[in-house]
Length: 249
Image: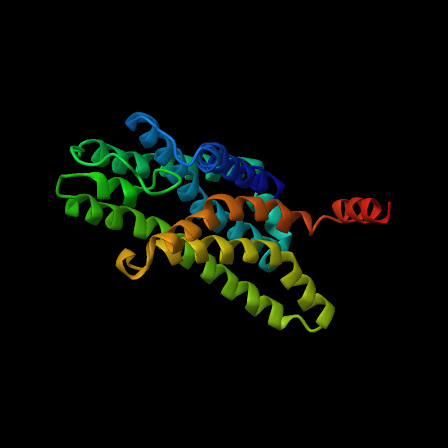
């Protein structure tokens, strides 16, 4: 679990270091400039990090499933080799899927306005600036991204169905509460991550104002990476004791 948490932290770190500094510059100076290549790189790093988190959360759900439903074989199945392989495959899939999208975007013609009314280069503002027909790339993004984003969610739901069944079978109340406490941090992160992303990308843009779009984007680019360490830190007794000591002082 701690190995997977390091990868989750790395993903969040990539998102924040890619977007937050430029966002702060835009806020302080009421706008900013960025080259087309820098904009594409920013979007690519951001998209890869978000796609990787989809895969990582499903792997972490499998880890929790093994720990609760098959504890005696947990160490033999979830060994270091499997952990490393699952993370490498997740990163490679993320880079490969988003690379296809990037190749399609750079082939578009940008001959009109060059001002993005946003605080980072997301794919919707980029497509709005293009004077080419973007229907093909919009269909391509749906074909590529929807399976790779919704399939991990389905996997997470299936694993948690088995976990809930295992928790119900536990006779003692303390045993059931321990099962849910083990998964509470991961479930919280899943709800926040999927809730914010689905809220902004699944609802048609014509039904949302530009301000709502920016606030929603701020949630999954800044707020979610900031909350994730706090959520998992609350499960650590050493951190709890350290916080209590600081508050007492």
